[in-house]
Image (cartoon, rainbow, N blue to C red; front, side, top):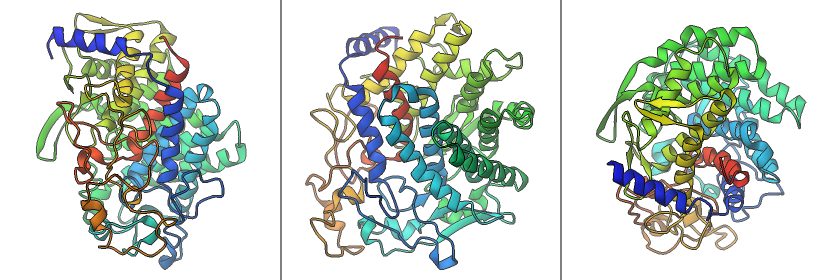
Length: 494
């Protein structure tokens, strides 16, 4: 993108900055998580077309593994991305809870649905459950979660077959959530923090990647491309914030340089090489660690390489930066390689807003070569991404189901596409639902608040169930967006 294009995008962003109902979008973005619930649903369930499902998870091995979330449009519980989504929801409460208003209660309910499950998944000493459900049999079927008759095998990592990334991410989720619940439920908060310490110790003591031990079942769905060292640091940083214990801070300081290595990975046939400082999502926590530690340490004298790498991360995103390493569509949407692109737009924008708060606290600017960047610019870029998602784009289309006048109608999601139990109480088996997947009709049920993978880099969107790369919603797209919407709901200006 040349300078003129950058300026046009900037004009577009500024022009639509105040045209969205962020409060309405916030309410819907949280409601989405109710549509992803597994287990026995509570009496106050608002997404009423969803019913109880997977009520015997773990029973074949004598462990209660009911609850938690389906990660996307399928019916498998992948604990690695589920834990990341939970961490981001908790971070949203910690940063922006005061601006959530009545939605803070629903956000805490969404977090608790996950943390109750993670307490179960870490309840057997020496084991951490990483997944429930066989993804291959699940992906061959198109059936409602309420009708599931596919294999619900639980998969665990252990001392003998470690999985540090999934264990450390669960520890991070429990530690972050413990702080979110501390004001309202100190007893539950203490339970979460105690378990977080135990799970982190397990992750650190028995090091190894779950790719090596559960690879046939977690790959290619949620392979860990970036190694487990980032999750160990991420977990330690969250435990330091939650406990203020020097052990965790020393762990971060001792190991932080391990994140400075460049990474090269191949995603869907696309080779990508970049600094680890620029990566953040369910797989790579690198940029998140630098932003998080900057926030909790503020003016620490031991800022190297944390703050410099956080600055480099910001410079890797800005359209006008000479070190930009992302792409932008003609309409202004940020792009990185791989599918479900809006996960990048939401997660990276979340970090921009959080880092802008750090810049305000320490009263400083960022230098991207000769370009001077203040905190208002970070807010502006993040707002542009949020507004694009909500409809300020060349198609004038919201990518959040149920928000705006035009939004995706044919999302890649089993429960949404098939008739509900209320409408069709008879069992729909594995293959009987395929006609709904192949249909061009609108989905039967509105998965309100779901944000899909998003348009292509030319700002085009097909609205097709079959195009799962673009039409499938995920918890880790929505989770960072919750915090962003809470911020913009109460901040009409930087």
